[in-house]
Length: 218
Length: 206
Image 1: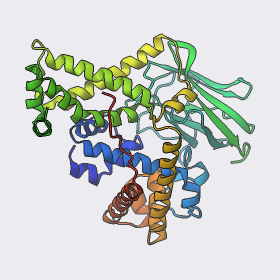
Image 2: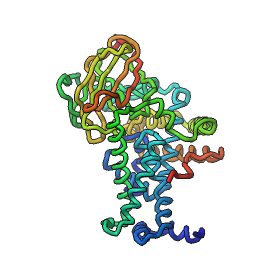
Image 3: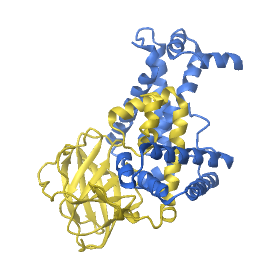
Image 4: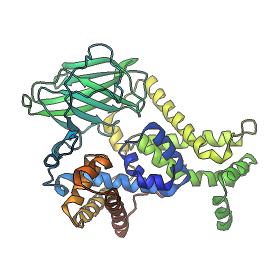
């Protein structure tokens, strides 16, 4: 890691966004320890990204990313979903997650899903808006802050009824739990995703609130 | 300790600093903490999702372990010049240990408590900083000369799309992309500082 790489690859911003690989993150953090001015850049990048997100609806009103397309249209996103959800267009939903689930490799095809990113505790207490429909829900949970050998995850409705659960999920090399919820809620309302340490399931590690709207539509 | 002496310690190469610590130089220990403290806190805040209280605990324990090891004549570092890597590895282990301890106690992530502990600059000052940061980004976005650059920021910072995709969709050169991002970051920092504020922690808990 050096200053040229950090600049060229926008490492500071991607570090704040949690998008570096484990190796990149380690190399960058060691470089940052030796270079405190890089830490200052991280603090400002963090502040700027938080401020942009806080004013996104106002600052970026009128931008319709769906109007532009590429040769490989990977994502369809709207400002309302920007913080929490993207719609993946691709191959069909085919994973069988009724058995023990393992993180897919990067090369595996992605099903048609909504994708939801949940960061460790940072998002707890907030509500993630998602749209309903026949698609499944791909849930990415950053568990770097709550390391465990394996996790249990449950999707519950407002009454605490379990819509879907997974008894044994293992984080991948980037400390992400990548889960597929095949039984997607069919009615609007508030739901919770609750994460447990599989070995100590008596207390949740984290709880995330979801607001489902547009259920029944595609 | 005079300012001049402090300065000379702060300018020592990491390996030399470690050598002085091994020779019981307490001022060298202070210099080591001065050098690495701020970056370590930044790293820990990132690793804990902004949990300042936990970051400070890990920061404290990390330096305790690091200094104990560096003082020990029986366990010298293999490569004293890479003391940053040793601090990093120690901090990671301390952090994992913290979570394991918490797990054994069967406590759980209380989101409300964590929200409250995210930043010690609570209350009026934090609201001022947040408000001025919002004003700063508002100004920098308004200053953008064209709609495409605004969309660039939206895609990169809000949608968190990658640079190659954004350049392709918006028909931008990588150089243009870099220029817009670099200018936005630079403008943001200048505007925050022009308001007499700083997003950098001046002190450390060590």
